[in-house]
Length: 395
Image (cartoon, rainbow, N blue to C red; front, side, top):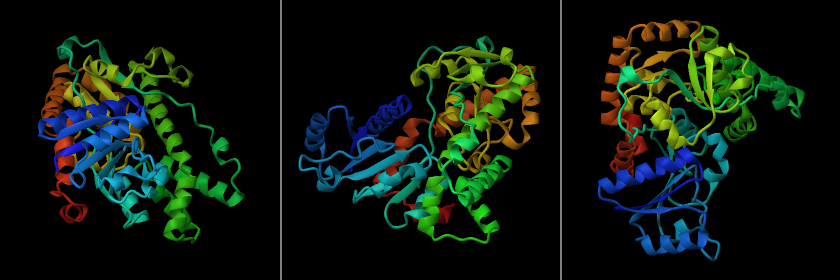
C-alpha cells in the first residue's frame, strides 16, 4: 500500500500538519492526493480517480473529510475499500459521532495515551486506535542566534474567560450538579488525573458504579469541564509568572482580562498558526501549558526544540518517560507553581546554561519529533508493521 489521500482541515494548525505529513509521505515514496471538503463534487471525482481499492489509505485530522459520500449518499470509503485513519487532537469524548460513524476500516490516531485507552475501553471492537503524538515544526526563515533573540519568554494561545462554574452546572439536577462540582475540585487539586479518572473516583466515594456505556455518556455530559480546566491552568501559569515580574510576550486573545500584574504581559494580537513558528524561533524560552494531556505532548514542545529555543512545559506521563528537566527541556508542575518564577529567572540569569538546554533539546527533537517522523510511523501502521496488541506488550 503506497497511496494515501490526506484531507486538509479548515483549522490553521491542522491544515499545516496535513501538508507536512504529505511532504513526509512523498519523501518515503507514497503517492499523495491532497483533498478538502470545500468542493465535495470535485473531491469525490479526484478520490475515485486516485484510489486503487484495497491499496489506498486516507488520513483525516479531526475527521474532516471522513463523511465524504458517494452520489448515492453511501460512505465512499466503504465502497472503495480504503483504510481510514482519523488523527484526533482532542479527547475522544468530543468525537462520539465520528467514532460511531460506520466506516468499516477505521483507525483513530490519538495524541495522548489515555485518549487511546479511552477508545479501547469504551468503543472496544468497533475501531482500532494507536498513540501517535503531535510533532514539531522548524521555521523556514534564517535562524536567529540565541543571544540575539528579541523575546525572553513567549506564549502563544488565547485566554478563554470561561471560569463561571455556575454557568456550566445550571440545568443539572442536584445530584449531577454536586458530582460535577466534586469532580472539578478534585481535578483542580490533582492535575495528573484525567477527567474519566476523576469521575470514577467521585462515583466510587458515593459507592456508585455505572455500566461502561453509561459511564462513557456521563463523561461526555461533563466534557465542558475539560475546557474550564485548560483555561484555568493557562491562567494560573501566566498569573504566577506575571505577579513575580517575569515578562511574557503573549500572542493571543483575552489576556487583557486576566487578573494579574498586567504590566508584566507584553500583549500582541492573535496571529495565524503558521506565523507563530518564526516567533518561536525568535524566543529564548517558549512556554507551554498542556491542554489537559496526561500522557501526551503538545506540538509547542517540539516546535520550541526544533527552533533551538528552550521549551518550558508542565509534565505528563509521556513527558516524564521521554524528557528530563534541565536536559532537553524545563519542566514544571501545575501543583507547585510557586517554584516556576524562580526556575525561569535562574535560567535567564544563566544564558550559557539556558543555551545548553536548547542545544540538547534540538538534538533530541530533530532526530525523532518532526512531522516527517510521524509520516514514517504512520506508514508502518498502514503497512501492518505496528499493531496495538504488540505495542501494549512492549509497553
